Length: 340
Image (tube, rainbow, N blue to C red; front, side, top):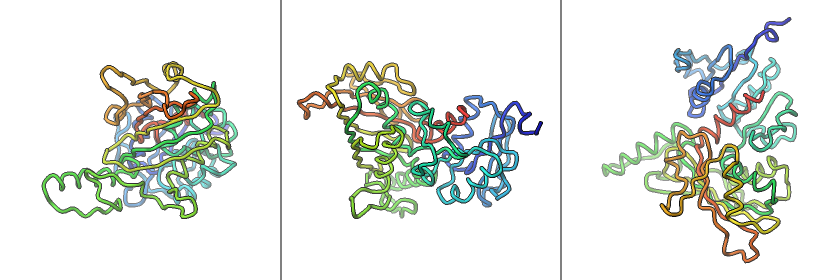
């Protein structure tokens, strides 16, 4: 019997361990008591030698190299598409299963794109790599799946309000520093994002396709929704906007279903939906907010109401907020690893 097959618990590696999502991956593994025998923290050469806390110990960060995956069973990648394209195949060759948080493999027809609450069975078809979806796709469509199962969604329109966490730890720090400078009346030159961030909103900072007018973030949400739902005909439109919030994305969503549907029906479906928490207090005017979603595993859903612009009664509007670093990234990846 090989050493790997005789182990009772897997060896797990985190690629990009010192980044914002990497740190959350470590916390998720600890908080959920993931049954691992060893945790290896991997990052670029400039981060090698640092230590990060895990289960009461300080674990060293090692430099990511081509031979880093010997003996690794599960590799959680969160270090950008270029790193994933180079190192994920090496991890698979070494015998690991990769859960990749970048966009490198999401639309590859051979790679399952998985949200455990929606299409857990898709993970069984993997050939060594499982893709973690875009954060906005996860947060927006997880609450929609219970609806789609009983009354197919034909059309989905959304506007996103995306936090600094989606652009990483450096963007979060830029928001802090630029806000401090703004309040103190000091000039501040942004380095991470293309526009002033304090007290400002701007269209998501990805390239716009001149043919469609949609930016790359919006296109990801459109394409990934279709793949995860296994419904290439669902009509999806998104407008993605960066807002001055540290973490947790929010979305205003309107869906059109195949048959008439009421707000009460949607509310009842979401009340018992996995991964979702209903926050829909009309009397107190209390609905999902990023400050409540931050550090919170479930996706918050509220403002559920019939779309009065659709007299057919087929459409409902709602508002969601979810932690981009947790369910939008690290938590979803750890849930996939738990399935493995």
